[in-house]
Structure formats: structure tokens, C-alpha cells
Image 1 (spheres, rainbow over the protein chains, first blue to last red):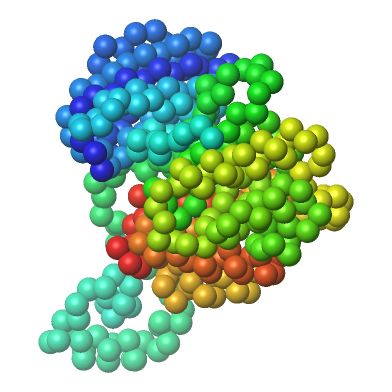
Image 2: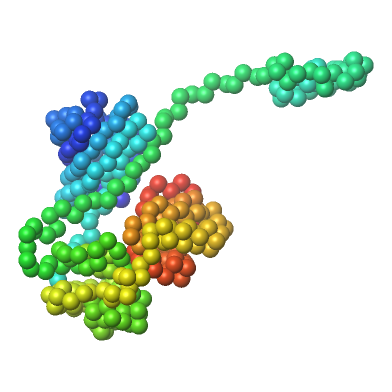
Length: 114
Length: 267
């Protein structure tokens, strides 16, 4: 597992948004984002980042404590030690009080044109 | 009565008073049979500390947005060797087999499929799996690490097949594809009869999550989840069992979150 210096998240909410603060779990520690802008309400875009400076074992976006949260897309910019910065794009998912979604992905395997 | 209470409450017997209690009970007759269970005092459960609520972690695939420019007439192909170097995934900007997938295990299986026939003419190709707009190939020589020269040859074959204008996959394969229900029933049978009894010895289990077309998605659990030999079990055990039991099965996807394995057999 690489050491994550920082990461930045951009979440596009779908038809059903939520008004609670957006939380994430890093290595099972539930935290709120730094530099949070926008909102997670319906159709809005939420952006937040976090200076981690620790080794990633798990990273998830936590669902609301009540109700549902429709997410259209999640984009995560990772800045890891000794690696080029990379971006992971995730598709639609619906979260609730029983779920969280995995955001952690290793550096994508390089590809080339043939 | 005290004996009955101790029986239900788990109290330690008092060695000094036990014989007299037993005598009293025997003198009173069959009291144990007449006492309703609801009258027996139950111990109050100890208050448990608030445990964190466990949430289910959802796994969703990443989107390869921007892999190819939109509205491009040219055939564009990306090659992506696996981290272990045992296989290479080719992604094309147009479909190779819409809605379905097909596994070509050898040259004979490629008969009448122009794309597969051309692929098996390449020196060193072992197997080919066509799925939607992707092609996954393996090589006979597992010691080779550099995929670039071979990938360029595969890319040229794909491009030629697409630009020639004919069908890529044999018509007999497409017309004989069974329904999703038939695939689901066959795979579930293989899991129940062959796969799960096999992995049960290591405390593992395999479940069928989804069937789309003739592609299946499975999940490994128990001792298989997070096991260092899970990839070997999947490719040499489960794949072989599935393809033998259900010859029409195409792509086999594994959605196991191996990082969340709590009790892997080999760690």
C-alpha cells in the first residue's frame, strides 16, 4: 500500500441528495473533509480534500445517517508518495445508513496504443 | 426450587446446602414438572457497550472516461498488460461482440470466427476472450514479460478484422447462445456440486452474483477472501469447472474485495 500524501474528491449528486456533512472513512477512522465546497444536495457538486500523510488500507465515502444519497459520479485525485498523481473516476451508486462505497484504487496499470 | 434456579441462572451450586435442597424437592413430589418456565427468574442481560455500526462496503467499477476521443472513425486500440504479466487486455473504440462474450481456448475453437482465426495464427497466442469491446489474451510462454511487440501484432489483427467489414465471431456461436436463465442454472449447479465442496476444505465459498448475456460475475468468501492463492483457485479451478460444466459461458468476472478478507486460508 502506498503512502497517500493527500486526495481530493468531487462528488456529483443525482436525483436524491443529502444535507448531512459528507464523511469518509480512512483506515476505519470516520472523518470530515477539509476545504469542503459545494453541497451533496440533489444535482449539486461537493468537493473536499484531505492531507492524509499515511498509508492507505481502506478509503470509503460514507452514506448518510438517514435517507438515501444518489451519486452520479465520484472523481478522486490521489497524490501518493513516489508515484505520479492519478485520478480515479467511479460511476453511479446509491448510499444509505447501512452502506459506504470504496474509493481506494491503486495506481492504474499503464496502457499503450497499438 | 433452588436447584432449578441454578439450572437456569448458571449459579454455582452450594455444596453444603445442595443435598438438603434435593431432599426437599423429592419430598414435595414432582415439583420440577409443574413449575411453568415463565415463573423461573431469568438473569438480566448485561448491558453491552455501544459497538460501531458496521456498514456494507460497496465496490463499483471505475469509469474509463476519456480513454478514446469521441466521434473517431479510426480504429483505436489500447493494450494494458496485467501487473503479473500473464495476460493483456485490449480495449477497442468499437464493439467486438455486442452484449455477449466468448472464450477461445485453442485454434480449433476459433473455426469460422475470422478474428479468432487470425489471432491464433500469431506465434505464441494461448487463449483469447472476446467481451463487448475488449479482448483478453494469454501467451504460451509465461516467462515473457514485455508485451509491447506481441501487443502490436494483436492490435494489427484486431484492426484488420474490423476494417475488413465481415463478421468477427462465427454465426453458429452467436445463434447457439443459451438464455441467461440457462447459464445461471448451469453455473449455480457447478458451484453447488463441484466448486463449493472443493473450497469448503479451506473454509471458503463461492457465490454467483450476476449473469449478463453469457458473462457471469462471482464473489469469493470465507477462507477464499483475501487468500494469497485465490487467483490460482479462480483461474485454474473455478474457470475450468465453469467452462467444462457450462461450455457456453463467456467472461467470468470476480468481484471479491480481497482486502476485506477476515480469515484467509493463506495470508
